[in-house]
Amino acid sequence: MKFLRFQYNNKTRYGFIEDNRIIEVSAEDYLNDNHKGLRKCPVNVKILPPVNPSKIICVGLNYKDHADELGMEIPEEPIIFLKPPSSIIGDGEFIIYPNMSREVDYEVELAAVISKEAKNVGREDAEDFIAGYTILNDVTARDLQRKDGQWTRAKSFDTFCPIGPWIETDINPHELEISLHLNGELRQYSNTQNMIFDVYELVEFVSNIMTLEKGDIIATGTPPGVGSMKPGDEIEASIEGIGTLKNKVIYSK
Image (cartoon, rainbow, N blue to C red):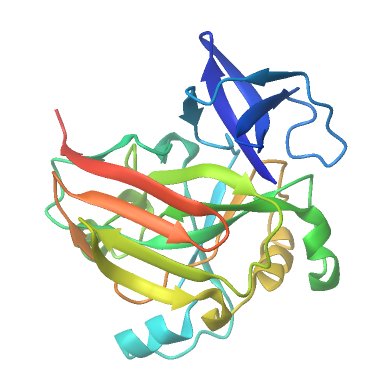
């Protein structure tokens, strides 16, 4: 099932896709299995980012083939950092290239969406706390990351977290092809089987550090092929079973 947020008649609404139609549900029923459809809405609505999380937890260096590409050792524990919710944009919206950077990179990632409050969750129970999965592009000002020696500024600009276009509930997160095209050219490709720490391990690790709320996101790391993009470029981030997240890069005003 594909859950999504959308704008219809100038109002934010919630729903899922069924037979190429959007079925609206209440905000309380969003991401729940026991939802009740309210009404059918047209498909030509504005699709919004599928969640408005309290926090976005990201994982660095979580693909074996990416570690091999960089010549880096496999980490003993997940390396995590945060992106602010203000960095989120949706499918079709513009990534703004900030004036203070000269090297902005793309990073396609599978993102797990939390379904309910999660604290000190064990790996064996982690699936019960995941509503579904979406696509995330962890946009990064690489030159600022090197300059600062830490990641906050480089990861936090407005528009640096495209997510969407929806949340898919019926997939196995550990057997998915993941790829990214820059202007139609394949730049990143792997399979989530190559993750160092799987999704359930990440839920366990993060929830034992901080309380996760409904709608929070855990971005699970990027595969090899990370590279730069520039204004005018079009980015297509794709994950098997979910779809494609498309965004174009523009100059900052």
